[in-house]
Picture: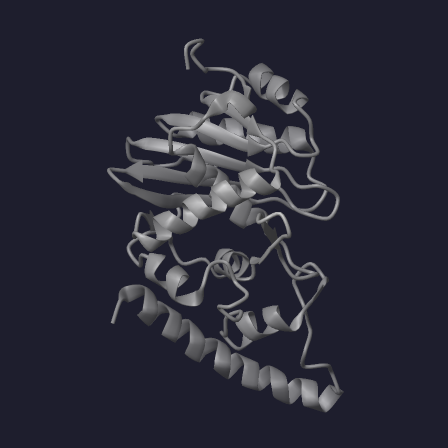
Length: 271
């Protein structure tokens, strides 16, 4: 039995007991079992209730990242480098990559940090911001992360809906990293998530245990459009900002065709 599966089973037993207690309280109050309220007050659908409180996963037929695939990527030896990047961070010398998903009015911003260790992409940090956090604050946090790490080779961010001016803001912040922006379209989303899925299938991606991140990965669903493209979505009341920041960071580790990207500070002219 793998270490990731043992962790999942421990998590399952804990949440089943907690869910039983919650069920008794809800029965007394007449609450609806199909929905719960998250920490920020939003109402989540039954899938999130099943996964977070009953430790169940979304049906593998609907989820782009099945339960078994996620489980095999969990490495019990991994942990975040820090819970607060503004403090001293003891990071090993290595090749680091950053993915940034800038939130809109209804979605938080998120930053993912991965390390490329030989042929394995390892998650080393995740930062999620409150709703309505100014982009300037997110950019400032990216700069802090890049200053604390010895070598951030590339920072890849989603510029969909925020515009190319973000590149200029990052250039002015003098972030110590190659900066690239990408507009997430159906083809680029498919390319990014399929790349991440392929790494997971070949055990090329290692994750530390993070219940919220696992939630976002598992609830991402997909459907085939009439044009033969894959369209991704997540249930109402949930978010996928951490998933996309991770996908951006993972995608940054590969050699990219940058013809459709905005190139910023630190990119060689002959890149």
